[in-house]
Amino acid sequence: MLLAGHRGFESVVALYDSTSGSFTEVWSSPDISAGGRYITISGFGANGDCALIGESFTRAPELALIRSGRYQTVKSFDLGYSDQITGIEAVERISWKASDGLEIQGWLLLAQRQTSPSSGHECTRWSCGALAAILARPLKLLILMLINRGTPSSGRIRAEVQVVDKPSCVMSMEIWAARTGQNLLSGLDVLVTRGVADREHLGVTGGSYGGFMTSWLITQDTRFAAAVAVAPHTNQVSEHLLSNIPHFISLFLADKYNNPGGKYF
Image (cartoon, rainbow, N blue to C red; front, top):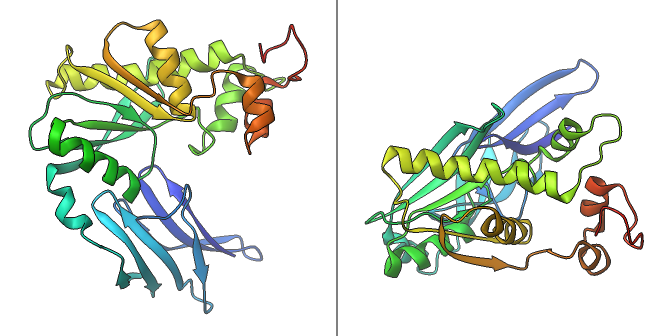
């Protein structure tokens, strides 16, 4: 079986032999990811060779091959992106301990002049680099993107539910938000302590779950000077009925959206 996935900061391709139970890593990179929410590959041959769309914060999407464990660019779709990312001075991988001791990881995108961080959740994707480039050039922002433990794309969703209530795997929105919110705020505390971020110039933004967390955080903490909630699911009934991932909410709440006294409300 040819596998591809994320391991912390890394994108990984591997082979698994179900007969022998052996697991062989074919290729990994802390810098290159692939188009979409998860790394997607198309295998050929029997030794783990595959094709993919590779990208990163500073790399425009490109058609690539992995042959004998080596990444090779076939065709870049850079239509001027490399000229636009000059505002990004560096990309740094950071990690810290949350209040409950869990290690949280994130990407820190540094602009030419550091003034304020924003938070979100992604792997090293070109679209996030594009957003950073747009913000960095005129606003001179630094951006903290968190590998969160509460979102469906983090790989920690099932474990996080079980931490809260192991017997029933049920979580209330309040507990869910509070636990994740502390992860986000603790990362900002680390940057402020390091002198990287200015406590008086903090902003927060995010889309979908990130929009929900943006909406939640500004009701719980007064440190943010600005907030932009993008497509937030602040109404869980609407999220269940109108989105394409109703199972995301039902997985956490284990309740019915038409129960007036239930967890959806």
